[in-house]
Length: 318
Length: 292
Image (cartoon, rainbow over all chains, first blue to last red; front, side):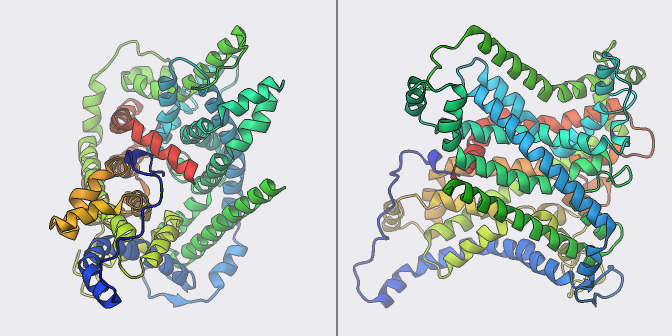
């Protein structure tokens, strides 16, 4: 978030806080006392909320991961057992595999499509506002709502997709009831819904590409692809990195589509990590185990994010 | 001020429009399918045709008797509005404190806030649920938070835990940091209290930021699903997204025309919000991406 909206304020750093005309630090502290008191008063609710509903749960998740806790009996210390069980848990392996597959497919495909659309919309074209709204609309809408619509769109008997394909003589497919097609269908929804935000960020990044540079490159005889490769692409690097990291993080957290459309089925073909955590915690009541799974989930997200940043830095230095 | 490509041939231009239009159609088709289904009589649902032969506006009214969509809608509205109000007040307060007051350890608190942004909701979900269940003196709990259901299935659980997020505190702080000191000093000399300076001098100056935060929080509240799924038990407390999911998994055969009518209603407030506040949506997203 930048400060572009704050109006005509100087972009330079503000001067150091105007010191009171007294030289003893004690007196200075006395003068700022009302400010400090107000500061604590203003910070308190936010800090309390963050502590109670983010920081403490975070620590508790870590703590519970060493316990067996089923809600009914008191938590029982089991050390690293939950983690050991996870290593050999086929459901967990399936969920991890599906989540990875989902991410590995939808992130690059989504990014490429979004960049292509952004490049298209960056031209001088009419109805840009309409296009932007159309592409952004799915992102506005709740994932549950669009998943419900897709459920109906993919209905094997009366769904729009099968009827459309029937025009070309394609046999009806039970998209969400097939182990082959259920995960791709959920991927398609993910790509479709995520396109808008990625496109908006790319559009903003494209605004920062210096026009003179593009012009100069073209005068030097560079073709479209060369201009893109040598001028545009390097200039949008930071936007690209942001899209990449947020996409990976969001993809790993796919949940609502699965909950509404397939509930992890058929035969675990769409079981993803978040849904498995949810099942372990709230239907199997294995709270401690689910917490261990959540901790592993957090570690994976953290490691992947770090790796992406490291690779990106390496690529830039090379 | 964008440079036009010097020798744009006619064909690529037409192709560009064709591709963009096709893409836009793909984005909009599910919404069209939703609205058209919402207008069909039940007998036409199995045919798989696009346009309803007979438009049935009554589906919208009938959907309300098939499921308590009016209650869901009211719950969502109450939840979203209160969460947005709480976020706007407390995130800007905390952001201001972190940006502009000389409290000790604000660097540490700021670091913590940034760290907390990264925590995925799925990681803290289970303990958060346990905390909410263990709030003392609520829902039959004793002072140790045991024995009852705490905040579960109440407005408290629905509103409070999701009413503020570290992200919004962080965003607010980023905007306060750049304001000049002289304004606060002048107000101080005029005798305005420190809280007054926050509320009446500094916050009005970052109005676009406050609106951005409000819009983002409203959207995330309205679209929230998992948390309400965990903490509500009765239709009386369910917000609309949860209502849709429940209705689409009903044991009886799903009445798609009613479900699509309900979904269309659930979608409308977000479309309206987007049309009113799209500047803030788009700029907010875009600038987040550029500054990283």
